[in-house]
Amino acid sequence: MWTRTRSVQLRASSSAAGRALIDAASARYRALFLLAASSGLRQGELFGLEVDGVDFLRREVTVRQQLIDPEEGEPYLGEPKTHESYRTVPLTKAAVDALAAHLERFPAPAVKIEDRTAPRRPRQRTARLIFPNQYSVPVRRGSWSHVWKRTRQRANKALTATYEQARAAWVRRGKPDGSAKPSITLDTYTHLWPDEEDTTRAAVEAVLGDVRPLCPARSA
Image (cartoon, rainbow, N blue to C red; front, side, top):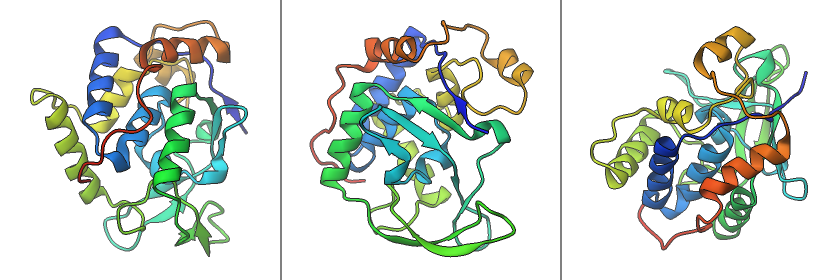
């Protein structure tokens, strides 16, 4: 059921764009951008990430759910996109430090939310989401699109990529993003590094290792 993510390649041009987005992000979302650029997590996986999904000692994040924001109704926690999306992703020291600094500055609130990760047994529960909005509730797609647009414009007014386009450019992987079939990934992500977690961390660390965990406060 669980896939261990190992292979990665960062392109110089896309990593520069990633750094610009991290530097342009508001304090509340800086760690999210750094985690996204260094791990390749999907948008819903980031917003559905709970504190217990991060192993700070082993420096890895476990993906077991995502935040789903339907057009009608309230956001809920659902299953990852595919069976292969259940995975463990190695993290760099920079990403771990950023998460720790983020949680110190923005402690994860207790969020009441419906959990549909077991579709036949949905339930209401309390989740400690790492990246809620400033009102301590799950981030909605509409509000996130505004945050993304503002951050993108601060970073580079010529940058027009969506989050998923940026994600695909930041991290090139063998099969870490939970694509349903290897062919889907291989058609998109063609350049592979050796499949070792330390190699993955070293590759990302070389590009993002000196990024500061937090920045001066900005409006969200």
